[in-house]
Every structure is written in C-alpha cells, then in structure tokens.
Length: 610
Image (cartoon, rainbow, N blue to C red):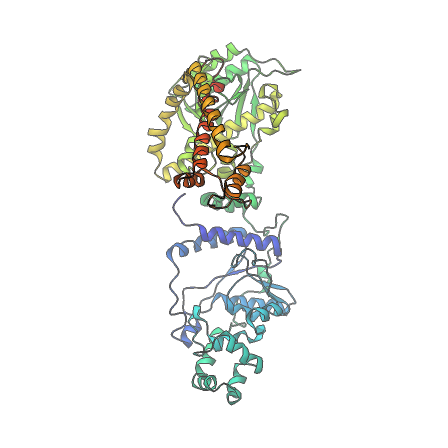
C-alpha cells in the first residue's frame, strides 16, 4: 500500500523460507553479482551486451533483500570481478572436498555443470510450482540437457547462450550439439577430429568458428577455484527449533516485515520480539468505590486514554453494558465490571455510581478518547445518558484509511502492527450453539480480555498515526472520517420507520404474481418441476427443449444464471424470459418485502443499520 515495489522481496523471502524448512541446511550463503565488470567482459567485449539493465523496480528491492538476509543471519557473499555463479561454484567444490552434500538454488543453465554425486540443484522459486521441488542430480541433468554435467560447458560452447550473449557456433542448436557430444568426448575432441563429423555443412561451420566455440566454452565455464577470504565454517548457520539461523535478529526482522506489511512472514516464521517477553502487563479490576475514585482522578489528569466497552450483544441498540476498560499508558489498563451475572459472581459497583463518576470524564472534550470502532461505544454509552466527546482516534477507521483492503479487526491489526496475538473472543464465549454472552463469563477472564483490548488500541494509535502522516492521509482521517463517527451514530440510532401493513399487502400481491408465473412456466416446460433447482431447470431448457447452450458450470452442466437466461430471452425464447421475471419477483419478496419487517428492533419499532 506504500506504492513501493515489494514483489521481488516477497518472492525471495518465500524461497528462503522454503529452503530453510525443506533442506534444513547446516551451512548456507547467498551470492550476489556486483556491478563491476568480470574477467569474462575482458575476454569478450560482447559478453552480456544485449542483456537489458536490471529494471529500477527490481534494483530498488535488492538492498532490502540484503537487509533481510543480514537480519535472518544468512551470510552474503559477493566479489568484485566475479559473478555469483563463480562464488557458488567455488564454495560448492570446497564443500564437496569436505564430503558435505550441497544444494544449489538456481535455474541458471550454467550452474548445471557443477552437479556431481555430492552437488545437486533445486530450482526453488524459479520454476512452476509443480517443478520447484524437483532435484537435479547427474541423471536428471542428462535427461534435461541430453548431456551429463561435465559436458554442459561443451554444450554451451557449441549452441551458445543467448541470455549471456555467448555466441556459440552459428547454425548449431541443442539437438545438433547433443548428437556431436554423444559421438565425441568434448568440444576439444570435436575440433581435434572435425574431419570425422559426417555432415559437411556442420563440419565446415565448426572449422570456421572453432575459436569462437572455444571462447564460448570458456565464457560459460564457472570458475571453481577463485580466491575467497573465508572458510566453510563461516557459513554455518546452526538452525534453531524454529528452523531459523541461530544469529537471526528477530526484532530487526519483525521491524522490516512490519514496514513492508509482510505480516504473513511474521506468523509463518513464528517471530517473537524480545521486548514482548520482558514487558510485564499491569491489568487491574476495579471492585471498590475507593479504587474507582482513584482511577477517576488519574483520568482527570491525562490528555488522552483508550476506551473499550464490553456488552452482551454486538447490536449496539440492544446491547447492555457488562463493563468498561480504559488504558492510560501502554501495558497498563483498568477494568470496571458492571453487570456480570453468573453463580458466585463477586459484588460489583452499582451502575448509577459508575455512570455518575465516569460521565464527566467521557463528556469532557478536552480529554481525548481513543477506541476501536468508537461508534459502537458511543451508541452504547448514549443509552446510559453519556454523550461521548473528545473522540480523537479510531484504530478501525485508521486501518481502513491506511489500507482499505486489509482486515480492520483488532486481532488482525495487533498481529500486523505489533506482532501480538490477542485473546480470541471465542476463548471466553465459545461459538455456535454453545455460545454464551460476556455477562456470563468470569470477571477475571473478561478483565484480561477487555484490558488487553484497551491497551492494544492505545499502542496501535501511535503507530497508525505515524502511518497516516507518512502516507499524507492525516487530513482525510481527521477532517472527513472522524467527524462522520457521530453523524453515522445518530443516523443508525434514529433508524428507519417502515410501513409493515403496506409491505404485507405488497407481499400478497407478489405471491399472486408468482403463482401466475409458476403456472406459465409449467405450461411452457410441459411438466412441473422445482423452478429453484438449477439442475432441474437445466435439464428442462437444454435436454428437453434443446435450447442453445452457453457456458458450463464447474460441475459440467450448462449454466442457468441470469446472464445466460437473459441471452436466451433476448433471442426470443419465452420460457427463459418468464423465469427471469419469476426470479426477480421472488428475490424482491424474500430479500426485501418479507425480510425487512423481521429486522425491526422490538424496543424502538424501527430498522437500525450498523
């Protein structure tokens, strides 16, 4: 959402993560090319001359990739005058001599010359999904290229490599090169015995371009003995139980991923900030009048605090207060239980006392209030005679302004911005037919949940405010979105009055029309059937009446959707036309005419949106 390209970074991290999880390496390094010319450019001026420069969008992501590798604890190696392939080749051969099994992650044709009994290639992230787990050993290289690994450079010497602008020999492609290398041991052997090449044209071309062939082989040959100022032990990564290198700086990695909005990787890599383990939370339950008055005095002396109401319903019009939580500073919060109702519940402060004490604070416009979906809290509190004022921040709205496509619930935002896993509401009230309401849950459990909500909301405010400023969205948030909270709250609480009697008469009228249309459909179909069954309708239209068929559904049958029926109706077929009319009236009746009266709030006699 920042407008900064991250696709290459995302793909690279995905690949690294897959390597760590699947291969579980003892040693690992990532090699990069450098901008400096290599020895190959000296040997051949045209080397890679036709290759376009790295696109700006991709080049801009490389520093971030290196930063991520550094934070992950994976060594980076690059050397002036050499390509990444040379670095990889040298390290691979060093490891092989120490009897270490090597996996090279690449799709570069040149690299297949390195394959040996102890060196394999896996093209993680470079191939189609079905191929990326494929491992190339000696047999697989022979199957793919038609020659074994030790003849890959001979093959490239003959056929060239367009991607690197290696010329090869004109008119010799993969098939001819393979046939030549089946008969001869190497490119040198071919050129030494060129008169034994049966095809006269190929024989003459080889003679003419012998030097170019040898140069091409040299350009394609990976340097496996370059001087590297390190030893294999420098690349030991010592994987932890999380399958991350022991030197992984989780705090730094979390920070980078949060900046890039890569919350997926924070979760996938099970990253935990060290500060989360150190910080002690101070969540308190207010059960006495003296504790309440002490809290009120604290609230009077702050400029802002986070607020959260707990109720027994998600419908703010019907909801009753169960408790209120406030957070004045991070990792600290207070919960005031008001109406918990279960066997053995301790004494709670009287509702009238709590309201009388907290009302002046909540109505003071000079003390700023922060919330998550503040509109809900505003509506609930209004039922108790409290007009919430001084609303300065709503994390849910801020999330929408920052990224409309992201999730805006507190659990998702806590994970995205704070890498913090909140207590799921299901842990308290359950779900499905066994779900209970919050007033039936023990005060201690609700207190921890509610205090956490207020605490997280306060912590998110500072981070999200910075994001709004960074993206230039402060004016949109402060001048448009925040003022709308009270406007929408008023509209929703006022609700809409509907004429139930008129809707009932309309429903009866539509019923009669549907009966008439049903009879007409049966007549045109020549039989009775379930009009609402797409399968039965399809058989009538396409199997029995042989109407022109359109697109197929996922199950293989022909579609009877609105668009297909409309096409048939437009072509002059009466039955599809009547069915379209039937469906329109049926939807109008079920979705609006009959459904609207069911949504009327029994307390207000009106329909309220949310």
